[in-house]
Image 1 (cartoon, rainbow, N blue to C red):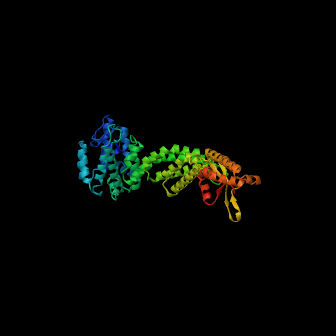
Image 2: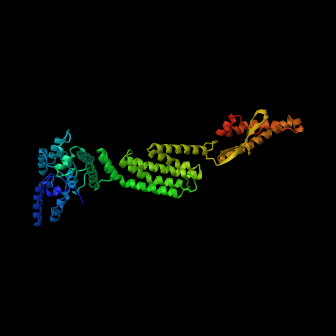
Image 3: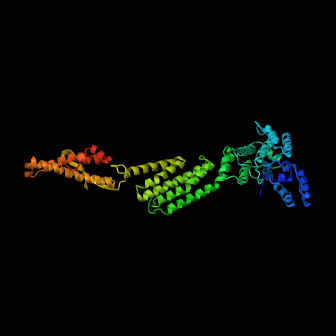
Length: 477
């Protein structure tokens, strides 16, 4: 197992990362000799000024440590987490570290790199400075855990940005050669290594939210690599949930229907939102709303939420479902990112609002339609003919209470018509009664009472109001 901090092979061997083979072999021989007699020889590169774990130079450790830096790629990996003695600044700064004066070493490397571009002669100083910034944040547990304060996170972020800039620089190949590599090392592979290795280190005491916080302000490529790594598990979990609910919707769908149709769609959609909402928010806090992976998973979820609602509507035509599901459609719109999904969400929200509006009784505008009444209406045409609504009149859909009011008003107009009509017949139109034609005056009186009692109630309905404006009158001619 690789260990890049306390058990870095260069630290155990007691050499800088650019040490020659002779120096490495010499130190190995010395340490092995001391180990055989039960003693452990110290080295300047133990670097007691940092909170490293206690050094281990037992015989078995020394026998295995050399093999870890045989491969060129491994030399560079361990070099990125160690010090190189390549120029005067490096030598003076390292001497300060040997004297446990990390502050002076930091000042030297800061001075040698501040405001300067990475070049062939100073590339080692950039790496050394970033390593020092990292090692300064080792906490007192001496278990290769890094501090988590805001200042510590800033320092770790600075160190990582320097290292990624070094890998991206045109002089990275020179850095590799300086540290003993005889072949060209792939910079993209080394960037992936840096992201993976720092995550392994940080995960000892950093949670995903801490890692996401650290990634903000990092070099974009490194930040992306880290975010991809820490989001792999939550994204996989969300994809599994979405796939499971999609299968559930399909298995409960009406196979004979051309369009997606399921009586269980409403419950499936509500459960889907409930199970994923917090997970989506957690993922947003990790990756940020602009992350491609986050947008992709959100669009998948939004489309499935919409599918569940549509499936229920296609199956039931239940106008009351909007009260239970409209918020889910609106939630789908808030998480959708691409134009097509947003357009789809807006369309179904508009449809749901229309369904909800049409399902409300237009007489009272508060209760849902649950029944209907027939309203007789006619319109006179040319040639003394007229148009009317068959089957007892126009079908006016209303709530139960408004239907009762309309029916009662209809009965009352009849009753209230009888009183003046009887009075009129008895006192003024006995002749018409005798002749057997008393009804014209009855109809006229009823029309007037309708205008007062009945018409103001039913014309609240937009369709009846429209028909009235088109020349239709209540009753029959």
